[in-house]
Image 1 (cartoon, rainbow, N blue to C red):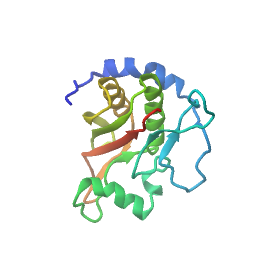
Image 2: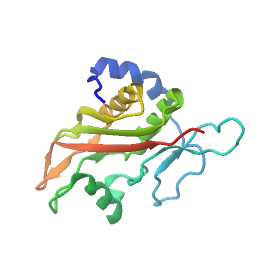
Image 3: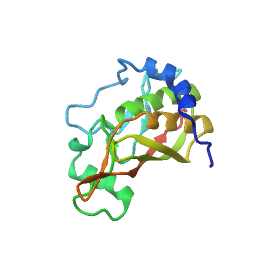
Length: 181
């Protein structure tokens, strides 16, 4: 799918209400225990006919509640697997606050759009940790593609390290929006 690049103005318009709504937002359902990896965010409201909060969004291989420095060796290996061969001592970019703040915004968008399916986006992160470009590879809908690109463009990253020096590199985001049945 090809999606148009978004201007900073259109991203700001798209996210203005969602960003304000997420101040003080907590995840529905049980919170992850301290140190435990959390791979999903629960729905904010149960579906009709049930009181069970299901997963609204899932990150199949990376925990969403951890910063890069908190990732276990296995979790770092999962992140590095997206990059192929990666020299020892190099580090990929990663959201400073972890994936959870961006995922919470994506859940808000999913609740409005009722999308399901895969989201795959590549975010170009410069040497200062600022997202400079977002390329959507796959998305459940054009609206979710725009929303996800906007969310990731406003996310602050820990820059990648190449031979110990901050450098520009892509950050791949893979998210699964489960079916809402």
